[in-house]
Amino acid sequence: MSKQLQLISPVDGSVFAERPVVSRAEADKIVTNARAAQKSWAALALDERIKLVNAAIARLGEMNDEITIELAHMMGRPVRYGGEFGGVNERASHMAAIAREALKPVIVEDSADFERRIVREPHGVVLVIAPWNYPYMTAINTVVPALIAGNSVILKHATQTLLVGERLVAAFVEAGVPAHVFQNIFLDHGTTSDLIAAGSFDFLNFTGSVGGGIAMEKAAAGTFTPMGLELGGKDPGYVMEDANLDAAVDTLMDAAMYNAGQCCCGIERIYVHENLFDTFVEKAVAIVSAYKLGNPLDPETTMGPMASVRFAQEVRDQTKEALADGAKALIDPENFPEDDGGAYLMPQILVDVTHDMRVMRDESFGPVVGIMPVKSDEQAIELMNDSEFGLTASLWTADTNRAAAIGAQIDTGTIFMNRADYLDPALCWTGCKNTGRGGSLSVIGYQNLTRPKSYHLKKTN
Image (tube, rainbow, N blue to C red):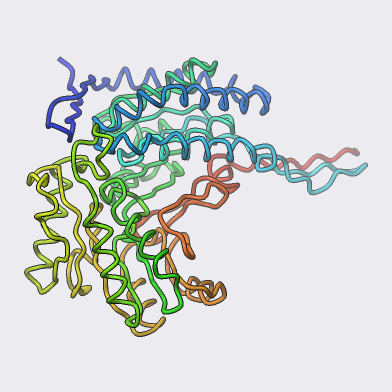
């Protein structure tokens, strides 16, 4: 009997879906089919590939009402937010629009004597290992440009969002993308590692934990398989004394708490100039205290459960340790009677925190944020850089030059000014330190999903 992947819904702890894990032989067949299909797919005109991918995204949009309800069951996001199609469409549309320019040859010389050019060729078979927190948008980041560039794609999705891969492949196949060009696969960790170690894939994209990224690199050791990794984060916000305070509070609290804090670039620590600190905290507490924690299928719910009890417990543990070490919790538990000690977790704001506490160092990935006062830009920069991660940083000031100067001193992948928790598809999505390597979206995303090939053609004997 084959091993089963089991999706436990955070809504009520029930089994929402099960799927059998494929055997190594079955996985090898999927890879073989992908490799065979890739050649004819790459031979299609670029405009035809773009047309088919755009049609697939449109088909996915037609499924959005059903998908929104599935997401609530699978990972707890409230239905009031309408799923992820807005972000999916924005990213896919942009990558389709820039494809011709991003993939066009670089002409070095075209004379009577020589033709010299650099072209971009698809890697071949791309494996995408996608996470559960934004299961459609994170997958689309690689799936769309990989397919447009002429690769075939195999998608392995997180068990917590088991049905997403099936939905995506169905939309693409129904839109006319050949079946073996884009395939979903259900794998266990062991078979995944074995396939990577065997050099089955020509490019690997993984979004997940640092431990997962280490496992990917270990499995690929010696195969020279290129990969893109987006791993942990502990993104900071810094509110300067000249910031628009109301806008800063509104945006940073949303960035810290939206999706129950389960956002790759969510804000997990905030530094506020001491002149604004008390007012910022007061406003933040008022915003968060008004959230409604509850069943994500209820349209009135603004915060659903975390995706699993295990994730919620990690946030509780970090919070409890911080309180034991002198931190102060500002959100009254009486405002959130729905907190059941399981997946349903109330939001929390902590002050009197220090970087000696795990809640200010380790990834929380939940609805808790620590807020610290700072005296200067120099102190804020030192604290923002005091992290093993580097995905984004959110700076709040009226001075663009000041933000740029501070941003140049922060070890991170993206600098936001007066914005947070947003992925701009025109810019490279990337990180540094233990957040990972490589980059997706933008022109650079196409460069990473293709390889350069040079032509030096001498026209005379």
